[in-house]
Image (tube, rainbow, N blue to C red; front, side, top):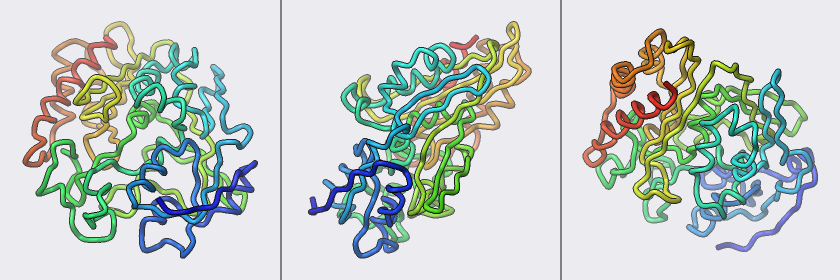
Length: 336
């Protein structure tokens, strides 16, 4: 690991004056000669540094910024979570468990209890892919500036089965899967003091659009909060994750379903898929197959089939298609 200086930022404005690169830029040819990057929980950044992929000259610690570690819930306005809120805080929040069950389940299955007490919400959403070719200093893959995705013809058993034409990596955040299903938005502030709210579905960047990064953040921008709209008493949600091991493993597949149920009929639905593509996906086909139907085993099966239409598995990850179908079906039946 390289030597670096440390700066404890006390405000968003102060932090934005010190930073000059995103973590993605610090790894690419866009990097300034002396990159200065943000750290909140630091889980992903320190991994990248230990792996020799990122060598910042300065780390701006944003974990002490007042107000970014708060969760607020209001029946009218919904849920607002500061960027420095830890996954453990979200897991323990009573309104999250009561009103946004799928989100509670997603954070409860993310990493180990120790990691959940460190990992911040903003950092979890902004983390880089865990593809082993990307994480290897010996492979100059597509995301590091070459024209080659080694996973497409190599060891790809954990990789993408959808939208995997340019790059077969998958996004590492299971929390994003649940937030996507709830129509979450990301609040971002820049160095000029301007703020914007971006739908989470538009926060992520597909490798076909820009392979050097996974999200829209620029060097002078910082996530300040994530908001989730209020939901009615008729809305039910559920999340299921499948890893190679039951405990603290990356998802092979994960699914979040949020649906408005009237009697036994689904009036409106959102079906999100994680570890299926380079970005978390909202399956419009699945939502269309579910909406207006009685929520039963037949509907759950047809919705799962619809979600997997167009899947293009690679040589070693074809098992993911039936795995996703099974999880989608189980998730839908859980909200029946």
